[in-house]
Length: 368
Image (tube, rainbow, N blue to C red; front, side):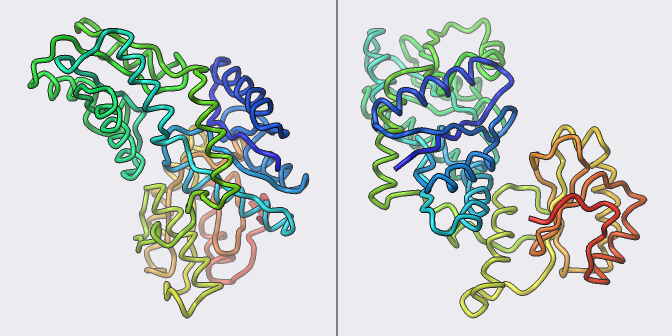
């Protein structure tokens, strides 16, 4: 069965080179055709690649993601949902992210041993970090597994959006008075995140190990995730545990996916999960949409939606992948995408779409 390797994407050419190298390595290791798609920054886009996989008869989707954060819980399930709807006869299995795979645990333990690390030393495992608490906890679990395998204290740290920061983690580790301290950048390649990380710990006496790059452990972990998916061990990304009540202003990714899953349950399984009918508006606040005025539009929407009460939910989202056509607003469960909106469009949009139940054609981009 074919595979689709899904990478995050980056303006840095080293990121694309890594993904291309892993795709070729997977084809050799698995003996199947491996397609490639990117969540952001470069083609082919995730949705395009998922549709192509469906058109070719389906296969396993392999996330080239270190942890199971927002991309795994939001972007990938929604793209696969669209592909399944268009190609209902094509099986599309979503594999788990790399996570705490034993090959990655062994990789860091072996690198520490090669440096002569022992119980009297310590290490800080630096992860990218994010707003998803489950993914951050998975990173902490990985640090614990490395600690048990390598036989020395390993403290997790996050380069962005989560704590402890690298400096805070180093302070925690200092309480143990280690002989030497190792910095383990759990990142794919030497890019912007690692450069920022090294700038933050500049001047400290650390032994910095290289990031993962094209280590064979990545290929081993991806191959195992492929086989797991075929055996039925793929990730439960759209299950009810990601569902919880959300308010009209819910900026978290897990709230976004929770809202969409709640709508699906309300429409197709009303007796099992009584969420109630409502309209959910997703407003893109990605870089291009911000430049186009999505933040003033967000404030205007908040004010304009007050009379609708709990019947209308509003969620600002990260990039929705239609850059240059924004600010973008998606209405669920209708699946209507509006583009190029400004505060001056709100009276007509709300009167037509929310009150009249019709599409506001003046700003219509597509219906998904």
